Amino acid sequence: EDKVVQSPLSLVVHEGDTVTLNCSYEVTNFRSLLWYKQEKKAPTFLFMLTSSGIEKKSGRLSSILDKKELFSILNITATQTGDSAVYLCAAGEIQGAQKLVFGQGTRLTINP
Amino acid sequence: DAGITQSPRHKVTETGTPVTLRCHQTENHRYMYWYRQDPGHGLRLIHYSYGVKDTDKGEVSDGYSVSRSKTEDFLLTLESATSSQTSVYFCAIKSSTSGTSGRYGELFFGEGSRLTVL
Image (cartoon, rainbow over all chains, first blue to last red; front, side, top):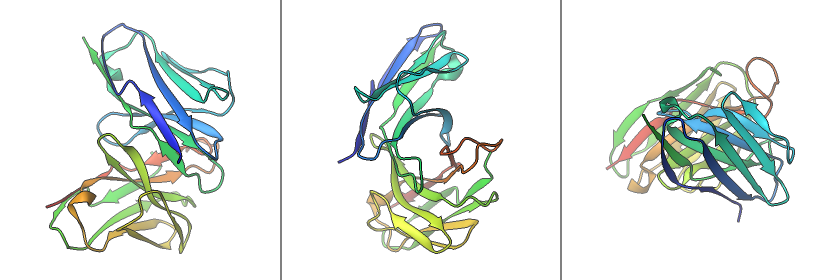
């Protein structure tokens, strides 16, 4: 059975801290891993990772994929209260019908 | 914004009643998806469509049916709602281009429909 597991499930830190969110996967038809941020409503796209060892970066957020060990991490440096959200990762095949398997999400709370 | 709207956004219904949720897109994307989101489970795929009248099951399809009679609309129907179907339902489309509307393979989600079955 395909599964994606995120850890921790919940994390509370102070503004300015650096956080690392983890995502491990066991998916039969794997091609890419995606990260999403979900605040109050719809998830919004952060990163798509297809190649192992290549870091993707967007401002204070970065992510990397390890296809040998089957995991990905999402780093957020100098956290701000606006980073408070649920972070979702998903793994699977993006070609064709693209049936992604999502993790449970990590709820990140940034306290001022 | 990939031009996705869901309706209704909120609905309260009683066990045993039929419910239909609508997803409407304006950008002619081929692939459309229905997910449900529950605490502790993340997003789970219910059904998806790969074209007009072409649909297939996801991992949690029991108790749900879908229809896609035109490209822009994807309907999710609960024939006889149960309390276990209380959830937030998200429609999504898959980006098929690398242009300004997104990267290939990126999913764009609607705002969600919160369904409560009493």
